[in-house]
Amino acid sequence: MLSFVTLALAPCAVLAAYVIFAISGFGSTLIAIPLLAHLFPLKFAVPVVVLLDATASYAQGFRLRGALNKRDVLPMLPFLVAGMLLGVSLLVNVPGRFLLPAFGAFVAAFGVYYALKRESAFRIGRWMAAPFGLLGGTTSSVFGVGGPFYVMYLVGRGSTPDQIRATMPVIFMFTTVCRIVLFTIAGLMTKDVLITAGLLLPIMVIGLWCGNRLHLNIARDHAVRVIGVLLTLSGVSLVLRSL
Image (cartoon, rainbow, N blue to C red; front, side, top):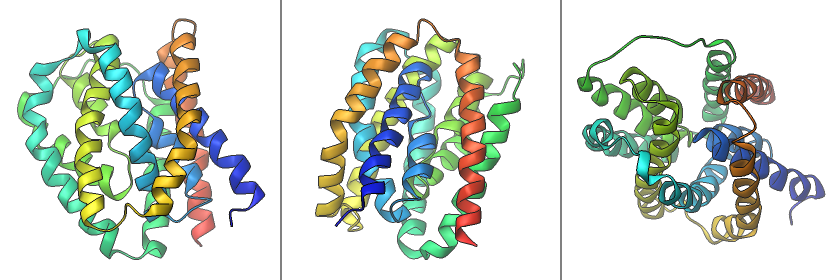
């Protein structure tokens, strides 16, 4: 039986995550999974959010498909698959008591990065699709979070904010389908996971609806910095909880 706190906080976490996702094109897992990890085991929270992300990514990807950056995304896909295979193996075999503090530190590090980041003119070659794809695929499976690596790669390739907002959901469409298959094979897609994701699905839809309307009124840079502060606090709290 779920507690009142879980029933109250889980929808709030999902709502906030998908408002951010609609505004920026990424950030749903970065927000949702650290918050849900306070309520559920990480091996339960990650598959739930992956199922929600599949629906949200298809909705956003179809809506914004005109600005998709195909040229830089396609070379990354084989390395994403390799990374996801590695990540699922880690998620299944590494005990939760080790995963939770590692996840907290990972989230906090990216929180500081987003809170302090400035516009950068750095450029990278297309060959960097290999390491960024491998890292993103691995962390997307073991922690449910790969978006930061994809964003850094796209920024380094010179993508515009509109291209990033359109391309990220398409990447998530690909990775979520792969992870659903891998999680099912690994036995992580349980009946409880499916029921929980189904109950939270309407909240995700409301979050997307709100975020798509707020997108025109909130500067993306401001939203990213708010994400950074939230991630830092959330990551630190997960580390403290695991001690």
